[in-house]
Image (cartoon, rainbow, N blue to C red):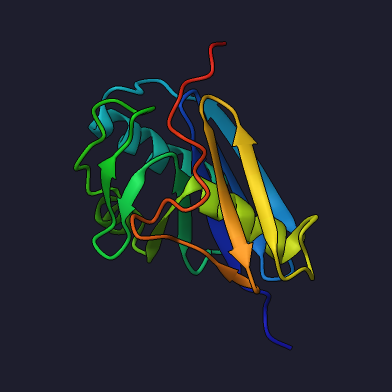
Length: 169
């Protein structure tokens, strides 16, 4: 019998970082969360993400990859944050390659609205449905769309985003 593979999932928000080790059966094995210490410094926040992931993985089986969701327009191929209005100072940060080098494993970045709808479609309330719309209300407003069982990315990779507006705390 082979071991169940795990991935490390990270959500970077405007105020919090959350991470979990998740297996292919959607079981969560460990979670950690921290407040964002330096939201306006891409370099410092990248370091904080590395530290959070190292804490998450300490004493655990090594995950096969890391998935990172964040409220941003992302060049998924390059692993670069193109525009992150809720994370000032992050435009142009090559987060994927930096994390991959620091953690010695593959890293994939995803717009958080798409990550959320994919998660719900895979293991949540949207499991087994062909069409799904997911709306996120947090520091900002976002979302994602599944149509005919597939993620709709759109021309700018932001299909489902409700508009980039801050939600006062």
